[in-house]
Length: 203
Image (cartoon, rainbow, N blue to C red; front, side):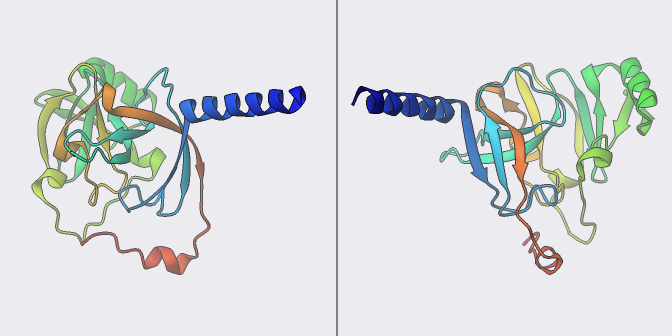
């Protein structure tokens, strides 16, 4: 009897630990196409030691009274400067023009000189499959943004399908307290090619 009770307590403890430490989510929507497609499963951990550019984060919408959860990619950290022009995203890490130029040269990224210093153009497209649909007519927020700096304790969150994503371009940089967990594992649901072709990407 004691053995069964011990096993029960152990399993309960493990279950509570996993519930407190990890979350499982099923992708619903198209804003992260095609790296994450509707039906995919992601595992995330609630304890976040560090947040880096490119991380997939589960966030709570800052302006949504229902507090819905979104999965977006961290595009800029506190102190980074950025702007958007003709749907291209320009990033100046650390708000340091000289550092940005050296970083871009070292990693063979496209760097452009602007009146406000050097910026990396579309830094994530090579690595994360960021996509555009140039046939879509998009609102101004998805077309261009003025030069801004990410505030301390905040993170700029963008969808990988840049032309069909409700993200920081609409509701601003996300405060740390609204970052709920960080994705560490993606379980892809098999989809036939015809299914992907039929995805309704935008209204």
